[in-house]
Image 1: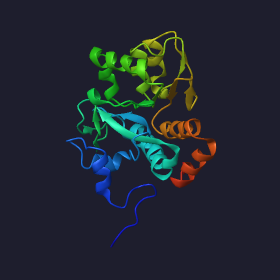
Image 2 (image 1 turned 180 degrees about the vertical axis):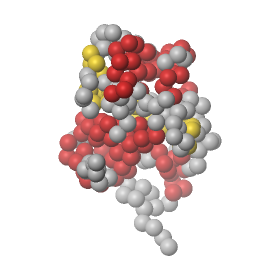
Image 3 (image 1 turned 60 degrees about the horizontal axis):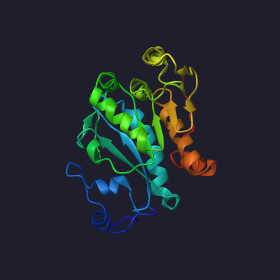
Length: 234
């Protein structure tokens, strides 16, 4: 049976592979990455061992739905890991990446999820230096959950409003006492830095990103498309 191609995707998948080389550890990463046009502006989602699954997958679902369904908006999203290989997440899921950190292409938005793996990153001087270097070239940094702790440890939240998972608000203040810790806020937009609360809040933050980068109408299109209408049963 022949399946109709996704809107904006060539019917012949080989056309994608011809345009965009796959990472050697990925399985046809170009198809997953949805970099359909060389002029598309890029959004990178960081993966690392013990990343919280929904911290990364929630924003990925929102942003990949947007960039695939509405390629005319001119954005694409991909994942990056320290060595370009797959990572084992906090609850056992394995996720693949499209790039190694050393090969990160030019991006407009860099999103750092949270999870237990961020604890090790807070003590990793080389990693924090790399995060600081991103600030020099990337216009917009974002985080989900305890991803903001990494930014705080790198000195990127000094004197700024920010939030994190509610269980880590004290740690955020401990890392940098000048941070205006916003307890109870789903996400905090401070211009070139957006931080969100824990786990599922990353979905809301990603929808807000679509609204900011495209339009509120487009964000509503995406919300409807992924059928995101929270009505908790408990």
